[in-house]
Length: 284
Image 1 (cartoon, rainbow, N blue to C red):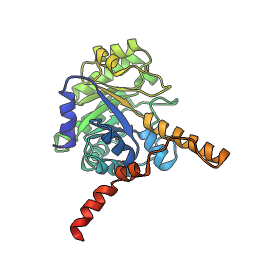
Image 2 (cartoon, rainbow, N blue to C red):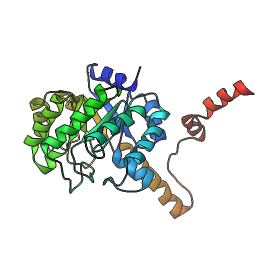
Image 3 (cartoon, rainbow, N blue to C red):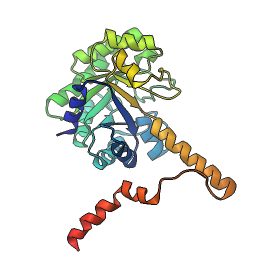
Image 4 (cartoon, helix red, strand yellow):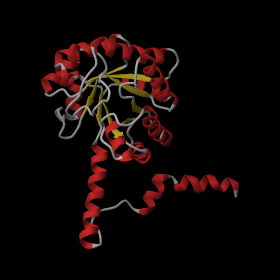
């Protein structure tokens, strides 16, 4: 079963899907080992973890795709890829969608920000005009319909630039253009979240950023509102950085650490030593 079909099956299965976000191959593998059915590639975390730069459009299509391919190669669960704005005009969008499909992603995000894009919960965002935004989604859908085995996640950031009414308008237009999943970024209240799901019927994704603009609701609460997916774009990245910072502080202050660490044997299992040894026996 393809990665795209696995996500289609999740859409058709009752209940909300909790989707942690990965930023490299090992975080993707951890998500899979803990039994989650899918993962989301966080652009913020990928830029920060692998390049040490902010999510402000500094990474190119090729750099993002190369990092994403490492993630999809490491796991069997499907991953939603961050295709940003599609990196240009409609033909660029089609190339981006095809590239993400070839890299093994089950779904790709295309958004309506102007380039250079910004993290959805940070200041200074700008969005393109309505017609250009819809054209991006149409181009992405065309790539899918012409053979790319991938779903289209259409995102609008206009809540921050033009208000909730425009976000709902665009979500409806994206759905009508053929998008599989809708993503209205950064609604600011539960009431706004309810309006998004009620006034733009479709398959909806909630983006839950700790200390971000959107209320941190439980999966059950999100499902009751009408969401189908709950993604956590920075949770693992934040947790890993905090854990490393704590250990480094201990080492600096006392020359030893007091933090709980993953056992060496578990580390070996996580990165695949056991599988490697078993496979190598065939050639001894």
